[in-house]
Length: 271
Image 1 (cartoon, rainbow, N blue to C red):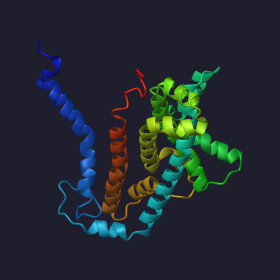
Image 2 (tube, rainbow, N blue to C red; image 1 turned 90 degrees about the vertical axis):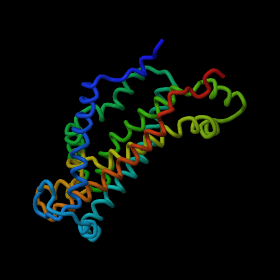
Image 3 (cartoon, helix red, strand yellow; image 1 turned 180 degrees about the vertical axis):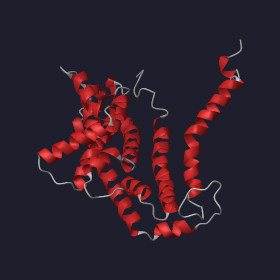
Image 4 (tube, helix red, strand yellow; image 1 turned 60 degrees about the horizontal axis):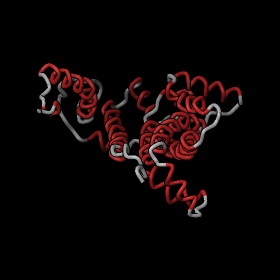
């Protein structure tokens, strides 16, 4: 009997899939194209010429480095906070039973389900009510709200695939809680945490809406790019920076995909 997997897709479906991919990725290719254009003030297609000078110009722009440095620091600290809180929440929800567990799970994932503008307004109102001045840490707190969700989703899925018999066997053999976590739980959920951390970093690095409400006068790299588009100065520089952002966010997402693609196997299952 012939397998359905060997059946070729209809031509119409192939065309539709190709059109969908083109719709998604052609704008990104245009960003790469205009990073090399010789035209400084407008977007002509095709570009009148090609040059590498904008990479040197971007390298020597201190405002670019300041914005990028702020984005990297915010993303790194937000991801670290998310790894701790997201893992603890995932362990509590997946490994124990208590009243209101599903409600707590819903509340944990709520920040990423709500529109970013709602989260931003809520955070700004809270900071204003508590008379907390806008600073580096207000941006970090804003980003951590959705970074925790990303880590939590990855961790809770992997926790549920870890067989409880492994943890019980570790305890029966005399291991304490820390030893069980270090030698049994962490090796089984490590790739999920790493993938969640990568995704959280990528989301934080290019976040705009929440940052707008929590940054005050500071400019992360996405905010800097928006300001450059509104008041353009050397337009191709913005495209060079955008190309760098695409590469910096694509690599963690690609790494997360490869780390979690085999995560459907239950650790300790059948033992």
